[in-house]
Length: 201
Image 1 (cartoon, rainbow, N blue to C red):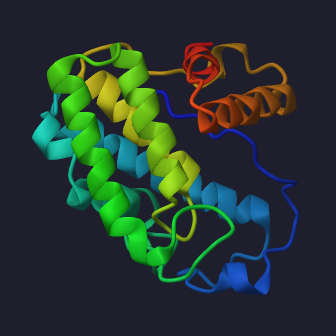
Image 2: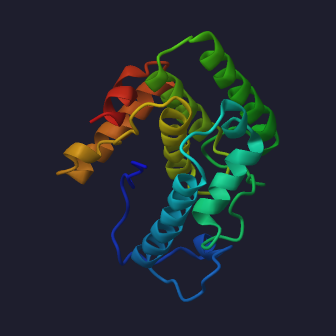
């Protein structure tokens, strides 16, 4: 899998009090320690995907159960709320009471795109990634989760090469993050080409 952590914060930044809520390992005190723990957890999720099989079906991946299970696999050793839809509203995402309906609509839309070849394979996976992160299903980890969902869709369902997410030219992480965020904003306006291009850098 080609998941790369885009962005990140200064390693010794203390974790906020509200960030510690739900943390399973209380000895974690800095952002660097948290990032390392999460990355190990995500590595386990990627191994789970690779070990299961070479291919997934559309019906397996495009379910709320799979969306939640993947998040739990990615963060279940780190956060108590891993795999659980958020119960509070954030400055990002839909209203907490609209998560289930919005996710169902997205998954049905994605099935339609695949069945009817509405878009090319890269665009289908990127639209899935963008829409799911826009819903903001979980308290945290939504960006990494959405990228891994796109990786699974493009490689394990659609049979294409996994995305690089700027990883092939990641000599300037700050510049890469700037381009990624700009591409996300373009996608917010319905222009997916910059995000598709970034995913293949």
